Amino acid sequence: MIIETHDLTKKYGDKTACDNINLSVEAGQVFGFLGRNGAGKSTCIKMLTGLVFPTSGSGTVLGKPLGDVSVRHKMGYLPELFRYQDWMTGLDLLHFHSQMLKIKNPKDQINRVLKLVGLEGQEKYKVGSYSKGMQQRIGLASALLANPELIFLDEPTSALDPIGRRDVRDIIVSLKNEGMTVFLNSHLLSEVEAVCDSVTIIHKGTVAKSARMDDLLMDNVLLTIRAKGITEPLLTELNKEYGSVQKHADGSLTVPLNDYEQIPVLASQLITNGVTIYELTPHRETLETVFLQIVGGEGLPLERS
Image (tube, rainbow, N blue to C red):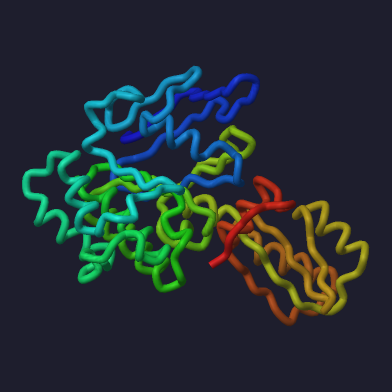
């Protein structure tokens, strides 16, 4: 595992920001780290990157204990809130970071990351003149300068328009194809669903769910039923057997199923009860619906792309 933690906990006085966090991240994957605002995501990332020390628990990143400075040159980090010097050009900024990273051939690396993030031809303009999207791109370029084995991206698409988000999604996929591990924190769940191999959802400082993306979504099927003859006693029976069955204003039903194998069983059950079936349409649940089921939706500051 490129990242592994055991009961990682961080407290600030009487407040517990992260409580017994257990993570396992395989090398070469895109890992999604999800949760409501204030759930403890940023605190956890800061512990993994060595910016803050845990109150208790342990972990390893790139085979070394948390906080080990010897692996920092193998890590990239784009924080959610960052600010570069307005008077520097993008090129100045990348040269400055190259010097700190002691990169031997900075020109080649700088040209590579500028092309990767789509800022070729914009590098001689001052950072202060950049749009929010361009500032996000130059931040991503800085994080990629050292060609790290592991990169932490904290809300990398927050300031981007839909085309910019697609471009960042393509960049993340290309990084994975090059063998890099991407640790992604984002509120844009459709973006996470599109690129991540596995996810961990944390809620109120603790891990609520960890799973591979395919397993997380395929475990849940929503079946839309349009039929005639569904009586109240039958609806009560369906609720008992399948859980929360929703009846819509147009008379259709939505039934949550564990897997696709339950569809013919349910169809046979309806026919046996004299129901005339017009439509059975299965839908795989989205990451958003699963997320809301786990953490609850009330007051959730959630973005949708």
